[in-house]
Image (tube, rainbow, N blue to C red; front, side, top):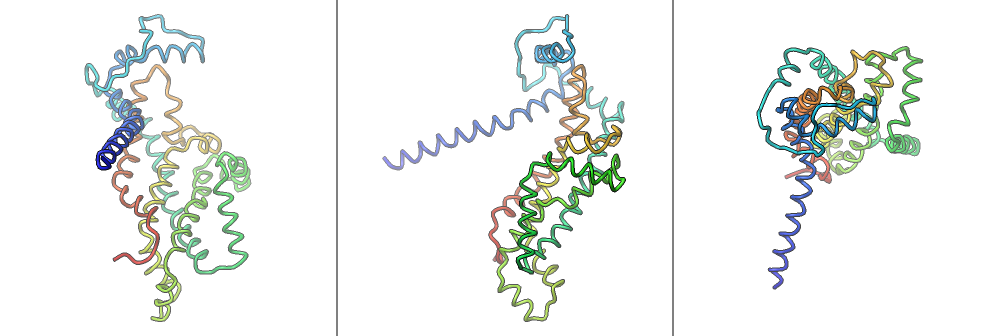
Length: 300
Protein backbone atom coordinates (compact mmCIF):
# COMPACT_ATOMS: atom_id res chain seq x y z
CA UNK A 1 0.00 0.00 0.00
CA UNK A 2 2.84 2.36 0.91
CA UNK A 3 4.60 1.53 -2.35
CA UNK A 4 1.40 2.34 -4.29
CA UNK A 5 1.08 5.70 -2.47
CA UNK A 6 4.71 6.55 -3.27
CA UNK A 7 4.17 5.67 -6.93
CA UNK A 8 1.00 7.77 -7.15
CA UNK A 9 2.70 10.70 -5.39
CA UNK A 10 5.68 10.46 -7.71
CA UNK A 11 3.42 10.34 -10.77
CA UNK A 12 1.42 13.38 -9.61
CA UNK A 13 4.59 15.39 -8.91
CA UNK A 14 5.98 14.41 -12.32
CA UNK A 15 2.81 15.58 -14.08
CA UNK A 16 2.83 18.87 -12.16
CA UNK A 17 6.51 19.40 -13.01
CA UNK A 18 5.79 18.69 -16.69
CA UNK A 19 2.92 21.21 -16.69
CA UNK A 20 5.21 23.88 -15.22
CA UNK A 21 7.98 23.01 -17.68
CA UNK A 22 5.63 23.28 -20.68
CA UNK A 23 4.22 26.57 -19.34
CA UNK A 24 7.71 28.07 -19.05
CA UNK A 25 8.83 26.77 -22.46
CA UNK A 26 5.65 27.69 -24.36
CA UNK A 27 6.56 31.38 -25.04
CA UNK A 28 9.97 30.35 -26.40
CA UNK A 29 8.49 27.61 -28.57
CA UNK A 30 5.78 29.93 -29.90
CA UNK A 31 8.33 32.62 -30.73
CA UNK A 32 10.47 30.16 -32.70
CA UNK A 33 7.47 28.64 -34.47
CA UNK A 34 5.96 32.01 -35.35
CA UNK A 35 9.26 33.21 -36.80
CA UNK A 36 8.68 30.79 -39.68
CA UNK A 37 5.14 32.06 -40.38
CA UNK A 38 4.26 34.55 -43.08
CA UNK A 39 2.91 37.98 -42.13
CA UNK A 40 -0.53 37.00 -43.47
CA UNK A 41 -0.68 33.92 -41.25
CA UNK A 42 0.53 35.87 -38.21
CA UNK A 43 -2.17 38.51 -38.75
CA UNK A 44 -4.76 35.76 -39.16
CA UNK A 45 -3.74 34.09 -35.89
CA UNK A 46 -2.89 37.10 -33.72
CA UNK A 47 -4.36 40.10 -35.53
CA UNK A 48 -6.88 40.89 -32.82
CA UNK A 49 -4.03 41.52 -30.33
CA UNK A 50 -2.24 43.96 -32.61
CA UNK A 51 -5.49 45.67 -33.55
CA UNK A 52 -6.22 46.32 -29.89
CA UNK A 53 -2.68 47.63 -29.38
CA UNK A 54 -2.87 50.01 -32.35
CA UNK A 55 -6.29 51.26 -31.32
CA UNK A 56 -5.10 51.93 -27.77
CA UNK A 57 -1.74 53.52 -28.66
CA UNK A 58 -2.39 55.26 -31.99
CA UNK A 59 -6.16 55.37 -32.38
CA UNK A 60 -5.83 53.21 -35.51
CA UNK A 61 -7.62 49.99 -36.36
CA UNK A 62 -7.09 47.53 -39.17
CA UNK A 63 -10.12 47.54 -41.43
CA UNK A 64 -9.14 44.24 -43.09
CA UNK A 65 -10.70 41.00 -41.97
CA UNK A 66 -9.24 40.04 -38.61
CA UNK A 67 -10.70 37.21 -36.51
CA UNK A 68 -11.91 38.07 -33.03
CA UNK A 69 -10.08 35.17 -31.39
CA UNK A 70 -6.41 34.30 -30.93
CA UNK A 71 -5.24 31.05 -32.50
CA UNK A 72 -2.03 29.70 -30.94
CA UNK A 73 -0.23 27.53 -33.49
CA UNK A 74 2.95 25.53 -32.97
CA UNK A 75 3.23 24.44 -36.61
CA UNK A 76 2.87 27.03 -39.42
CA UNK A 77 0.55 26.23 -42.31
CA UNK A 78 3.33 27.24 -44.67
CA UNK A 79 6.93 27.44 -43.47
CA UNK A 80 8.83 30.45 -44.79
CA UNK A 81 12.29 31.85 -44.11
CA UNK A 82 11.49 35.30 -45.48
CA UNK A 83 11.89 36.99 -42.10
CA UNK A 84 15.33 35.46 -41.57
CA UNK A 85 16.33 36.46 -45.09
CA UNK A 86 15.33 40.04 -44.33
CA UNK A 87 17.17 40.10 -40.99
CA UNK A 88 20.38 38.40 -42.10
CA UNK A 89 20.75 39.56 -45.70
CA UNK A 90 18.53 42.51 -46.60
CA UNK A 91 18.65 44.66 -43.45
CA UNK A 92 22.09 45.10 -41.83
CA UNK A 93 20.49 47.24 -39.11
CA UNK A 94 19.49 44.17 -37.12
CA UNK A 95 22.94 42.59 -37.30
CA UNK A 96 24.48 45.91 -36.25
CA UNK A 97 22.32 45.91 -33.12
CA UNK A 98 23.25 42.29 -32.46
CA UNK A 99 26.97 43.10 -32.56
CA UNK A 100 26.33 46.13 -30.35
CA UNK A 101 25.03 43.68 -27.75
CA UNK A 102 28.13 41.50 -28.12
CA UNK A 103 30.49 44.49 -27.85
CA UNK A 104 28.80 45.61 -24.63
CA UNK A 105 28.21 42.28 -22.90
CA UNK A 106 31.40 40.26 -23.53
CA UNK A 107 33.84 42.82 -22.02
CA UNK A 108 31.53 43.26 -19.02
CA UNK A 109 31.51 39.51 -18.35
CA UNK A 110 35.29 39.16 -18.71
CA UNK A 111 36.40 42.19 -16.69
CA UNK A 112 33.69 41.85 -14.04
CA UNK A 113 34.93 38.33 -13.28
CA UNK A 114 38.61 39.37 -13.26
CA UNK A 115 37.95 42.27 -10.88
CA UNK A 116 35.63 40.17 -8.73
CA UNK A 117 38.23 37.40 -8.36
CA UNK A 118 40.77 39.83 -6.93
CA UNK A 119 38.23 41.48 -4.62
CA UNK A 120 36.82 38.13 -3.47
CA UNK A 121 40.30 36.80 -2.64
CA UNK A 122 41.02 39.94 -0.63
CA UNK A 123 37.77 39.62 1.33
CA UNK A 124 38.52 35.93 1.92
CA UNK A 125 42.16 36.07 2.99
CA UNK A 126 42.30 39.36 4.87
CA UNK A 127 39.60 39.73 7.48
CA UNK A 128 38.99 42.84 9.59
CA UNK A 129 36.28 45.22 10.71
CA UNK A 130 36.91 47.65 7.85
CA UNK A 131 36.85 44.91 5.20
CA UNK A 132 33.69 43.40 6.67
CA UNK A 133 32.06 46.83 6.58
CA UNK A 134 33.07 47.26 2.93
CA UNK A 135 31.70 43.79 2.13
CA UNK A 136 28.44 44.71 3.87
CA UNK A 137 28.21 47.78 1.63
CA UNK A 138 28.75 45.52 -1.38
CA UNK A 139 25.83 43.36 -0.26
CA UNK A 140 23.62 46.43 0.38
CA UNK A 141 24.46 47.83 -3.05
CA UNK A 142 23.74 44.45 -4.68
CA UNK A 143 20.29 44.29 -3.05
CA UNK A 144 19.31 47.67 -4.49
CA UNK A 145 17.28 47.57 -7.72
CA UNK A 146 19.53 48.70 -10.56
CA UNK A 147 16.97 51.40 -11.42
CA UNK A 148 17.99 53.12 -8.17
CA UNK A 149 21.61 53.36 -9.32
CA UNK A 150 20.79 54.69 -12.78
CA UNK A 151 20.69 58.33 -11.67
CA UNK A 152 24.06 58.15 -9.84
CA UNK A 153 25.55 56.33 -12.85
CA UNK A 154 24.21 59.05 -15.13
CA UNK A 155 25.67 61.84 -12.97
CA UNK A 156 29.06 60.13 -12.63
CA UNK A 157 29.20 59.39 -16.36
CA UNK A 158 28.42 63.02 -17.09
CA UNK A 159 31.15 64.13 -14.67
CA UNK A 160 33.67 61.78 -16.32
CA UNK A 161 32.57 63.00 -19.79
CA UNK A 162 31.77 59.44 -20.92
CA UNK A 163 28.02 59.95 -21.23
CA UNK A 164 26.64 58.80 -24.60
CA UNK A 165 29.65 56.48 -25.02
CA UNK A 166 29.88 52.74 -24.44
CA UNK A 167 32.07 53.38 -21.40
CA UNK A 168 28.97 54.63 -19.56
CA UNK A 169 27.65 51.07 -19.78
CA UNK A 170 30.96 49.22 -19.49
CA UNK A 171 32.47 50.82 -16.38
CA UNK A 172 29.48 50.23 -14.02
CA UNK A 173 29.31 46.70 -15.42
CA UNK A 174 32.99 46.03 -14.67
CA UNK A 175 32.56 46.91 -10.99
CA UNK A 176 29.14 45.40 -10.33
CA UNK A 177 28.94 43.86 -6.82
CA UNK A 178 27.07 40.65 -7.68
CA UNK A 179 30.14 38.70 -8.83
CA UNK A 180 32.19 39.88 -5.85
CA UNK A 181 29.54 38.68 -3.42
CA UNK A 182 29.06 35.27 -5.04
CA UNK A 183 32.78 34.53 -5.47
CA UNK A 184 33.58 35.71 -1.93
CA UNK A 185 30.97 33.39 -0.45
CA UNK A 186 32.38 30.56 -2.54
CA UNK A 187 36.04 31.21 -1.69
CA UNK A 188 35.26 31.32 2.02
CA UNK A 189 34.13 27.71 1.76
CA UNK A 190 37.63 26.58 0.75
CA UNK A 191 39.17 24.81 3.77
CA UNK A 192 41.70 26.95 5.63
CA UNK A 193 43.84 23.84 6.15
CA UNK A 194 44.38 23.63 2.39
CA UNK A 195 45.70 27.19 2.25
CA UNK A 196 47.83 26.68 5.36
CA UNK A 197 49.36 23.56 3.81
CA UNK A 198 50.25 25.57 0.70
CA UNK A 199 51.89 28.26 2.86
CA UNK A 200 53.94 25.60 4.66
CA UNK A 201 55.14 24.41 1.24
CA UNK A 202 56.40 27.94 0.55
CA UNK A 203 53.57 29.27 -1.62
CA UNK A 204 53.08 33.04 -1.64
CA UNK A 205 49.75 34.84 -1.92
CA UNK A 206 49.85 35.00 -5.72
CA UNK A 207 50.51 31.26 -5.96
CA UNK A 208 47.72 30.49 -3.49
CA UNK A 209 45.38 32.69 -5.53
CA UNK A 210 46.28 31.31 -8.96
CA UNK A 211 47.01 27.65 -8.14
CA UNK A 212 44.48 26.90 -5.40
CA UNK A 213 41.63 29.40 -5.23
CA UNK A 214 41.00 29.92 -8.95
CA UNK A 215 41.10 26.19 -9.88
CA UNK A 216 38.72 25.37 -7.01
CA UNK A 217 36.41 28.22 -8.11
CA UNK A 218 36.03 27.11 -11.74
CA UNK A 219 32.41 26.06 -11.16
CA UNK A 220 31.58 29.34 -9.43
CA UNK A 221 33.32 31.36 -12.16
CA UNK A 222 31.30 29.55 -14.83
CA UNK A 223 28.09 30.15 -12.86
CA UNK A 224 28.86 33.85 -12.49
CA UNK A 225 29.75 34.16 -16.19
CA UNK A 226 26.44 32.60 -17.24
CA UNK A 227 24.32 34.70 -14.87
CA UNK A 228 26.12 37.96 -15.70
CA UNK A 229 25.88 37.29 -19.44
CA UNK A 230 22.13 36.62 -19.29
CA UNK A 231 21.58 39.69 -17.09
CA UNK A 232 23.42 42.15 -19.33
CA UNK A 233 22.33 40.51 -22.58
CA UNK A 234 18.75 41.50 -21.68
CA UNK A 235 19.46 45.02 -20.40
CA UNK A 236 17.15 47.76 -21.65
CA UNK A 237 17.02 50.67 -19.19
CA UNK A 238 20.78 51.35 -19.01
CA UNK A 239 21.30 51.91 -22.77
CA UNK A 240 18.14 54.02 -23.05
CA UNK A 241 19.27 56.33 -20.22
CA UNK A 242 23.03 56.44 -20.83
CA UNK A 243 23.22 56.22 -24.64
CA UNK A 244 21.36 58.84 -26.65
CA UNK A 245 22.75 57.57 -29.96
CA UNK A 246 20.34 54.87 -31.18
CA UNK A 247 23.09 53.39 -33.39
CA UNK A 248 24.89 52.24 -30.23
CA UNK A 249 21.85 50.59 -28.65
CA UNK A 250 21.90 46.80 -28.23
CA UNK A 251 19.34 44.54 -29.84
CA UNK A 252 17.43 44.20 -26.56
CA UNK A 253 16.42 47.88 -26.84
CA UNK A 254 15.71 47.61 -30.54
CA UNK A 255 13.37 44.64 -30.04
CA UNK A 256 11.03 46.71 -27.89
CA UNK A 257 10.75 49.34 -30.63
CA UNK A 258 9.93 47.15 -33.64
CA UNK A 259 6.72 48.35 -35.22
CA UNK A 260 3.64 46.17 -34.80
CA UNK A 261 3.40 46.02 -38.60
CA UNK A 262 6.61 43.94 -38.63
CA UNK A 263 5.53 41.27 -36.19
CA UNK A 264 7.00 38.41 -38.22
CA UNK A 265 10.30 40.25 -38.33
CA UNK A 266 10.14 40.75 -34.57
CA UNK A 267 9.69 37.01 -34.04
CA UNK A 268 12.72 36.25 -36.24
CA UNK A 269 14.92 38.82 -34.50
CA UNK A 270 13.81 37.57 -31.07
CA UNK A 271 14.68 34.00 -32.06
CA UNK A 272 18.16 35.03 -33.21
CA UNK A 273 18.57 37.01 -30.00
CA UNK A 274 17.69 33.98 -27.86
CA UNK A 275 20.22 31.67 -29.52
CA UNK A 276 23.37 32.80 -27.58
CA UNK A 277 21.68 32.60 -24.17
CA UNK A 278 20.15 29.19 -24.91
CA UNK A 279 23.47 27.79 -26.16
CA UNK A 280 25.40 29.18 -23.20
CA UNK A 281 22.86 27.80 -20.74
CA UNK A 282 22.81 24.36 -22.36
CA UNK A 283 26.61 24.22 -22.51
CA UNK A 284 27.12 25.54 -18.97
CA UNK A 285 24.15 23.99 -17.17
CA UNK A 286 26.36 21.45 -15.41
CA UNK A 287 28.82 24.17 -14.34
CA UNK A 288 25.95 26.39 -13.19
CA UNK A 289 24.45 23.72 -10.94
CA UNK A 290 27.88 22.63 -9.71
CA UNK A 291 28.96 26.19 -8.94
CA UNK A 292 25.82 26.97 -6.94
CA UNK A 293 25.54 23.68 -5.04
CA UNK A 294 29.25 22.97 -4.40
CA UNK A 295 30.06 23.52 -0.72
CA UNK A 296 33.83 23.88 -1.04
CA UNK A 297 36.72 21.60 -0.32
CA UNK A 298 38.68 19.27 -2.50
CA UNK A 299 36.79 16.96 -4.81
CA UNK A 300 37.89 13.38 -5.08
